[in-house]
Image (cartoon, rainbow, N blue to C red; front, side, top):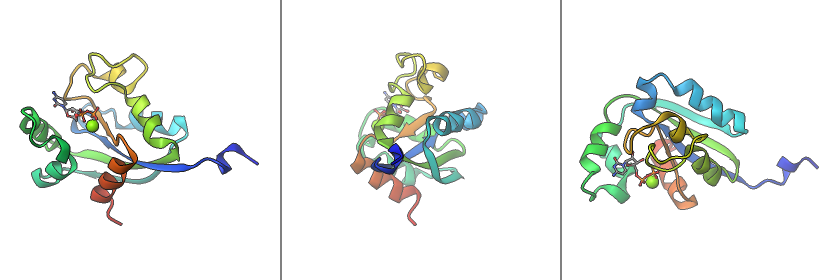
Amino acid sequence: MLPHMNAPEERTLILLKPDAVARGLVGQLIARFEGKGLRIEEMQMRTLDAATADEHYAEHVDKSWYPSLRDFICSGPLVALMLAGDQAIDVVRGMIGATDGRQAAPGTIRGDFSLSNQANLVHASDSAASAARELKLFFPN
Ligand code: CDP
Ligand code: MG
């Protein structure tokens, strides 16, 4: 039996943030995920309104830096993706690297392309519970 036939599938929400779209990195970033073997199940370009940003970042809305993050995440179009694959949630978190692009390891997306702790190109769900909640917000069907 092929290995993938036993693999437990997971789904995770990825956002290619407005800085990724503005810098023309969407194709390169999607290529990394596809190259890894993750499957795109849904994909949508949209510009978030403040209410949707607040819902998506519910855990952060009370932080001192949240207003700045909200301005950034709503500043232009982003690309939302549902990616699927074996251990997709942790695999993608590994691929994007540490939150602060200045500290993210080379070879990760943030390590290779970001020099910022805010404009760090990619959001990815950090747990099964977050993935379920976030995917429902972006892809309610
Ligand atoms: O995105 P990740 O899960 O790695 O980090 P987080 O701690 O959940 O923070 C969410 C997002 O808030 C980050 O990806 C940054 O874009 C932003 N952020 C910020 O603007 N200022 C900070 N001091 C920390 C995070
Ligand atoms: Mg997070």
